[in-house]
Length: 201
Image (cartoon, rainbow, N blue to C red):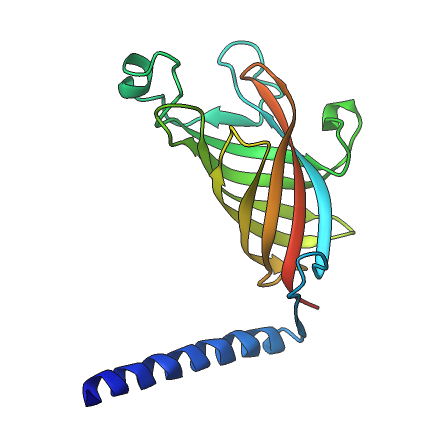
């Protein structure tokens, strides 16, 4: 019984120490931590548009912003008749804009989405994202890091905001994705509603 109590006390001390160190990290950067506990009142929010142009291997080399790093597995193309791309990994360096237009149409990117997605479901289209929004403008500098499942059958789906740097130092929140436009398998645009609930200012 004493061993269990001692273990519980150590765990509590470790949690307190972790919270203290996180607070000190913010203070060390001269910032004040703001945490919103109201879902309707994030400490920061923004709507952005993510544009992905997948290299098709033929004629879009000049404007492609993503490419398959692996091929779909034989399992996805032989066992499942719908060819779900199961096992395919795509890396990207995609423009992110404040409006819906592509940079080629005159819309200036506010950030770059840099990372990867992989198709991780055999029966239907589903992917998993891991990427950073990299900001380098007069409005914002730094990164927002996002992770999570992109459940493509859902109208909207959430990715976790798991951290950041610069203007978004140690931020936490949710990014709600919604398919806004697509052209076959080569181009898609996602609307990204980002709500940050932990901010350092």
